[in-house]
Image (cartoon, rainbow, N blue to C red; front, side, top):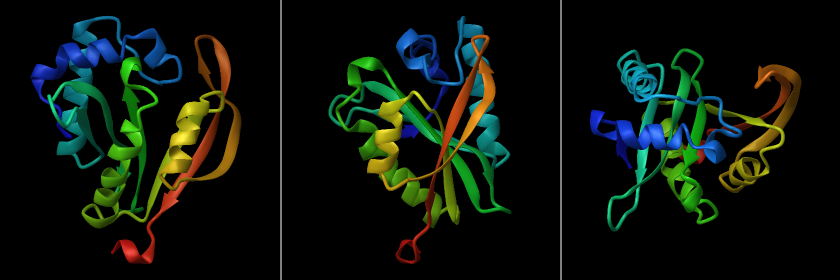
Length: 167
């Protein structure tokens, strides 16, 4: 994994404009210009210590596969919200599971967070399975809490707490 750079613009656009990726994802882009605003936002997040995102790369050939990171990072409250996405050709290979463990460890050890949250559309069974695999616990469902594509959607909330042995 590595942090985003301006050379990643076309890749981010490919991912966040792909119909299968954005089906359950809260962000989508229709142009490279909109996507560039996302890269600027990502850099501002980190600069303002409100979040951090990484590109997930193939270990062998460094191809770009997806992204993972944190939004709504609050050092005061010691928590953040995790998010992730992959290009569809990489789904089902355990990539997010492999990437998420060191990212969560980083949040607990380096950022000194005590809680990581995840908000998942209730119909997104694949993401819910991944969250369970990486140690997140289901908390509750917020029914009809957001509007997406002119329809009400519900969000399942998952959390992962820092264990004492994660010091």
